[in-house]
Image 1 (cartoon, protein in one colour):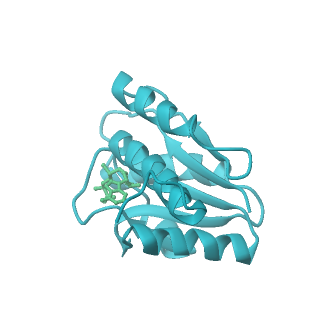
Image 2 (image 1 turned 120 degrees about the horizontal axis):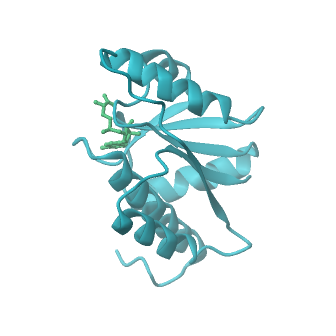
Length: 156
Ligand SMILES: C[S@@+](CC[C@H](N)C(=O)[O-])C[C@H]1O[C@@H](n2cnc3c(N)ncnc32)[C@H](O)[C@@H]1O
């Protein structure tokens, strides 16, 4: 099972890029995490929030791979604690198919995409900017990996 983060927005604040890069460097060949960043759809005057959601969602859908399990990051999703998230990743490993953890753009995922995803995962009941969600997700996947592998980074 290969795990990747698929997200919107190539122009992130420097602290997001630096933080994400710092955590990505810590993954190993045995448990790699890749990042696939898609440009946000152009914002045209007069577009509704639903139209903006749909435009970004279409860009993400185009980047999905065949047979990939699609897990959307969304504040309305299921909340796991650290060990629960680690257990979820272990289950994905047992199941086999590759997993895309998908973060939406500034307007979020379209309703239809949310309905058709394999699952929705929430990092918090509060909404955060997508760059912060990216950084938090990469850190949480790293933390989960340290739980799975018995690395001392995570302390209960
Ligand atoms: C600014 S939020 C979009 C908010 C939008 N109003 C909505 O209804 O989804 C941008 C993206 O960041 C991610 N995100 C933000 N807060 C999150 C949270 N608490 N849990 C999981 N993902 C979150 C989601 O992928 C979301 O699509």
